[in-house]
Length: 371
Image (cartoon, rainbow, N blue to C red; front, top):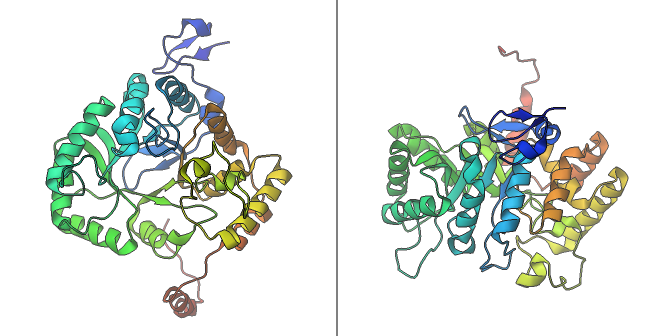
């Protein structure tokens, strides 16, 4: 029986002959892929986030050492994952160093995403989206990642202290110099994305192809304005914190202090925030469906997102957690279970959306469009 060695197209009859990590073709073939915005590039629906990477553990999120990171990245490649996300502020740059080291054997096969915006030093200008900071930040990110380019460079949030044109010009310059393949954003409102895309279209700049946003069964806020705009603008959603800081794994209980050793326990708070008066009821429903499926609550929450074909960033503190998350690929929620989860978590329709829906209901005749 021939096996695939990975990092190329080598098949051998003895796994010990492989010079590079083994790729689990069965799992890799199970992975699905989605286009990145309007580009010709595709990314795996499950991606690996590196916020837990780095031994400083500044934010008390993981503190993973290089050996564990190497194993997790190799396992991700085995599973068909080809998108890896980090940021210059994660563990004060240690996340980028660790991820870059682990990805070195696979660089041409995979997509690396990182971000710029947060504070990276004590200087008053070591923050934000000025040309000054962006130029320094990309140089340092590339050095830490050990690469000459990043595939996706994302504004980590809006910067009201810097003229938007300055930020866009700086990003476009990075694209034209070959340091950045595609621009993206994170944590922006719909009007901010709209303004940004319009400026780029006017100037002939590269489009912003992705938006990395918080989205889960405990927070569907982006369905009001952001997701509709992203569909209109053909942007791809990258979901951060799909388990809502681990809450959807079922490890926390209402009216009880988060135990030590967990993310919320170590940090002393639930983040991202959610409505605790209703949120734990949703968690109980997720647990119920997990029992019906013979799966874990985390796998159910991830499967719900995968059913919507969004790219989901996994963030694990242990190999066991990562394996559990990969198991979401094996979960097939029934139509009834999906409907139940949608119904109990559906946010109230906001004005003027409900008025727009009401006034759009008048076209009752069939409309045929060319394929």
